[in-house]
Length: 374
Image (cartoon, rainbow, N blue to C red):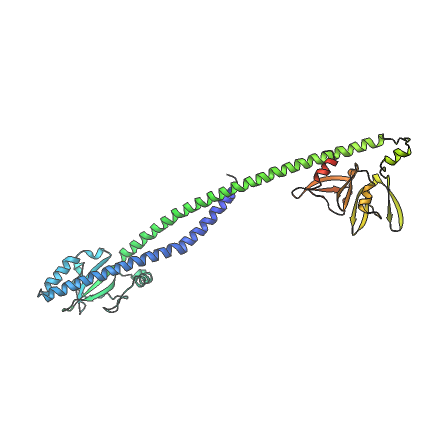
């Protein structure tokens, strides 16, 4: 798999961010919300249960059922229920336990003081109970917590509803592990989806890059051919020049009028106030700057000319000179290299190095190639 580092770094970054967010924020909030809902339901169940027992016991006492018979019925009903999440106990106004799931505690003093229920009219919410359990000291943690109290009418008895703290903690731990497993599976699915998305995007952009690379290679190949053609053309001119000898031909006046003006062999220039004729074969390139025509020789010396670029170009041999743009004329034998410029244009490097950038626009590239016999 190409660009494996992208996938590695993406995986590491995702795992770090996901684990931090999930472990520090999402899981604690989820567990807290779920625990509060669970505790609220348990409190509602406990409140409803002690209300029913209180009403039934009061009715029995009203119907002349003895107190001992009522307590025996309650004891049989709650016996062994202290292992459940909610269980009941009964004590009298003196604090003596008269009914409890654990028979060994019968007759003992009820010394358990609830931090949550201060009187029989207190209403405990799930959030209050959750915060209370969270703040309990682990070393002095009680086995249960009283969440509701209700008196039995026409008697000195009080029914208490207890929450089994160990059971609540076990349920919370189980839900925490369940939440971790769910979020782990969800994280793996999200990571897989992210890697697949990155893979699809990378394939898409790799295709784009490959197309651009192929286009660039074609451009490099064309430039290579162009530079080879330029080099061959320059050699051809160099070989033909010494072998061509001027031949005098007799022409009539009519023929001379029809014949076009021959290219100049010299160009009249100025250096300061001194006239300086320059041989055409010594010219490297000609350019215009601030409406002044400058002629640059092969040795790098620069001269000025009075004529405009159009006038100068009209007197030059079009086989040897090319009008690259509105500001520049280049000589074939002074071109050092042709390179790609932008999407469709070309840039010419001269010998000597030109003082300005010589750019052939995309509209003149075809003419330039034709000039080079391409």
